[in-house]
Image (tube, rainbow, N blue to C red; front, side, top):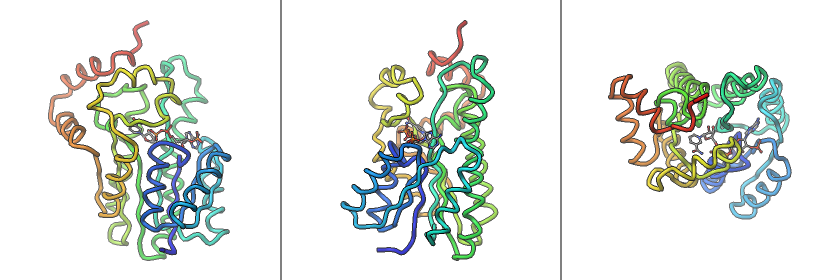
Length: 266
Ligand SMILES: NC(=O)c1ccc[n+]([C@@H]2O[C@H](COP(=O)([O-])OP(=O)(O)OC[C@H]3O[C@@H](n4cnc5c(N)ncnc54)[C@H](OP(=O)(O)O)[C@@H]3O)[C@@H](O)[C@H]2O)c1
């Protein structure tokens, strides 16, 4: 067993939970965080029983601006040496942009964007002191696709996170720190129910939908190998290849026909 810790945000379900299980099976101790504390406690016990690693959990809402520092303080006061940081927590907003409150958009940006930057900023100095570390940012195929898949901010924030991950690699690779942007396509998780778009997810053809376990395993393999990007499955590698190589005008048309319910028709 390693004396290293992996911190995973959004570890109470879906891709984050599967990443946690995979890292436990690789011998890492875990710090799990999300909002649902009872669920985190139960999952922690299950992981300890199954994999024999140490697991701690801390319930935090990442839309609260103090949460990243409180998570960092929890880790440092317990002397958890975090060598892997997985920024995974996320959701989508179904409501049209003109109908959401500014507060809802700010919370969204904080959970998917600012908290990722803050957690990374807090943990990187310790990784440098330890001689290296790994960061993973769970992005999305939406980062390469026409904006407005799910809603206007989701894709752009994921693109921003990809660029942030690129710059981490540029700045810290020589210090032994790599950042991997994991870009899944449709994955079976709690995401679509939590984001109010489960009916749309149910209409996605089966060949385009993959399990969270598969996405997590491909992502963790890429992270261990120090890869900058991981687009899991051949299906989505091909789709991303097309998205990167077709003109923007075709790209926008495709976006409208592939995600029809997500455009405001009022
Ligand atoms: N599912 C897909 O098709 C898909 C595709 C591409 C990318 N992704 C990305 O994958 C990541 C994981 O999503 P998932 O599909 O695994 O969905 P999920 O099953 O709904 O998991 C989302 C996780 O984020 C946590 N979370 C949500 N809001 C939070 C907040 N305010 N503070 C702290 N934690 C919060 C949730 O925990 P609590 O509710 O307990 O807080 C949960 O553990 C997201 O970044 C998502 O954008 C998903």
